[in-house]
Length: 345
Image 1 (tube, rainbow, N blue to C red):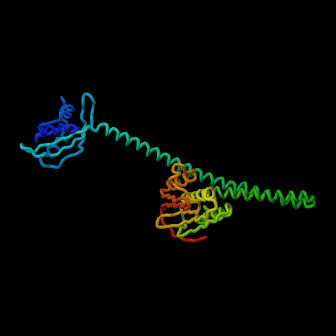
Image 2: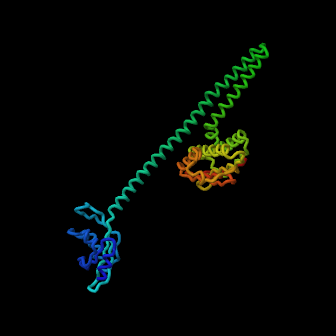
């Protein structure tokens, strides 16, 4: 009676089996589940496993079988069994759980996760293509500005100077007008060169990342009237074009953010190499901010930086606190190792 009461109190179908797998005791939940239906251990594999448990083997847990029912169709049952000593010999204590809904939910979750991974992979591929196309377009526009418009402006300056010489006998007013036009043409030429350089510096392709960054930091400091110190230590002489372009863009975005948000802060930009990696650091001593306070509100510049790093299988770290400036560290794995050199400015 005690055993019956104990089994009946269990909230899942449970039964006590003899060594022959004949049911000795069963609670009402077990009887309701298998009323008029064959026991689940008709499955040869499960029957063999239960007999092994009864013969002194270890318990089994989570053995799943498909079981057909008239009312609910095929259900997935999870069976747990262990041997217990009885007066008439070894017995089996068997518990059964219907895990059909749980397995369906797991399958749906796996399908959703697979779809999500697929969507993320597609998004990553599209993002990579967009960034690559953007960089290619910048390079093309820079080249066209430099090779086309810049030369036309230079020709305009030359024509103005020649016309000025041919019109030396004109009035002072006309000569002043010539000087003004020449000055405007010179300013236009400078602006076109600056735009071409910001789009894509040719020095990045011809002289490498370290020199391109040093030049950009110098120009940025002059333009924004901010102290910027650049250093390059143990950087590889040959850096893959995709990595060099991405790190250059990241430095651009970071310095633009400094000019926009950090006031008259001073900035330290470092490019350094290590075993199989390349690191770019940008640190300013501006007012800083609390990253937690702006979570989910990052600007496109910061999002672009993170995405470029992710596409290169790198690591992006941003540290900041109110009154402590901003420290950005980018670490990119390199496909191979090169001899390195270093310089500081």
